[in-house]
Length: 561
Image 1: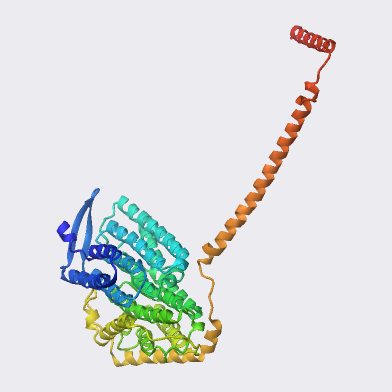
Image 2: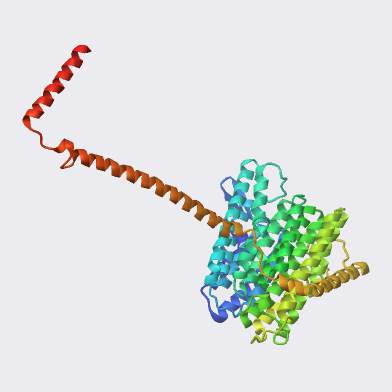
């Protein structure tokens, strides 16, 4: 068992991430670049099967399960770790890259876990690693990091409650598809959906991710939500409730991405949009749909990281984050501009990964005769290209010049963007590179004449709509109230109001009690004080008279009784 675990890629990444915290300079750079490649070599060499059985209480944990689905997700996670390390070679933070490796290693461990308990352990380690990545963004990121951590710890509690109820009810420890019968599967589903960014816990993504450093959000965009997508594929394929949940996420993300002004918050809302697209595909549940979800998770990680790298380079050069503060950077940063344009096109354009992956999910919806789902997904595909592709690229790189003193991104950042662009281009030009890694056999040809023409028409129409409505979009830029307003603003106000109201009542009660005590003490002083009635000096004759009267009263009562 120990020998098998030595081949576990996640353990090498986590231990390597801890070691990175003690290294500087060239040794740190070499280790950060070599670890993902070494882990990928280990993963590729492990035959499909279950390894690393570990006895825990009355259960045997399957710490390493390798199959086509887990291998695909682990490989794209390792790709992001490698390319992200290239991009972050100039990152001065001593915390971010080590934390990113612990975070990414936990994500790899989660998608290679064979049982629910192992999954939960890596799940919680992901929350710790990602929080540290956000913290590395600086002092301004601390409050968002704490909110992020609270949401994910709450999700972990819900997930653990579901796992415990599942095992207590006689369910198996191995991660398999669950029927939504009884409370346990619903708790597991809820815990996973919190990490996926589903209603009403979706606002943690635009709240926390943009607070990370210029390189931190690249790592954050890849792991947490996609690990949740993976678990949904394992545990709830074909659960129809996921279709409306996913479409609600996609619609919400699209609306907020259209209105949002901060470039990285636009891309954060676009993450919710695209994860919702995947969640709806899982709800369809056919083999073609699940293949499409797995493939689109790969493509989305690649093109979203590419766009975030381009915006990160802009932040480094200008210090600006809002679309209204940026513009005209194409002349000063032509290479970065080219990669940003490619990242936008990679969402749906032919010869890119997004084209060959979204098509699978759309075709699955059509094959299942879910016309309304297909129409909604088409709107989502066009809308996200407008909101997170055209809007960001045009406003940041081709908008009105702002006289910003910017230079081209340094070589490390350009190489990170170049590697992701080549990955998307290779998968888009030769689909078998990605299709052969999918969990189910696939016989689908994305490059038919009708499909290519239709997709190009859709992109062209979306572009025309964008430029027609460009002035209106500029007028709309700002920030809408999100769900987190209820617990970040309204909640504290109500707490203060209640506490203030209660404090007023408490003050009134205390005032009445103190007034009563004062009256009681005054009465005692009047009777027993030095000048009180009962404390005065009385003549002896008067005292004898009073004693005689008391005795008379006692004798009268005694004989009458």
